[in-house]
Amino acid sequence: MAELYTAMLIDWKIEDIYGSHRLVGTIAGEDVKGRFESGTKIITSQLKRINFETGIAVTKSGSIYKLG
Image 1 (cartoon, rainbow, N blue to C red):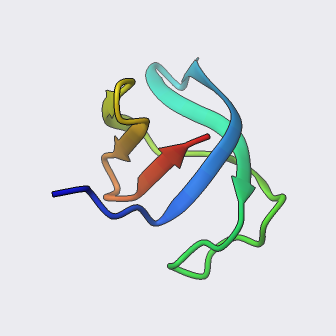
Image 2: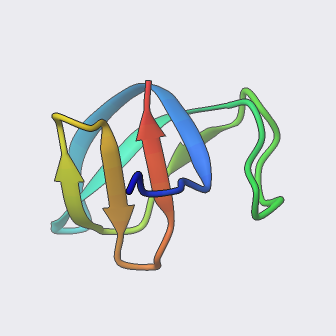
């Protein structure tokens, strides 16, 4: 079963910020939690896991990003 995601992140990269790995990128389309508009540049909370094969990243705060 495919994991549902809360937002798509494009032009992303992994960075070490504040001593933990986070994604830096741009929201594309709808954020189902209503936090960000499409085109908003964000820094996620700390990464919990990332699957490069499926293009899904999960943060410690519970957000799930589809990586585009």
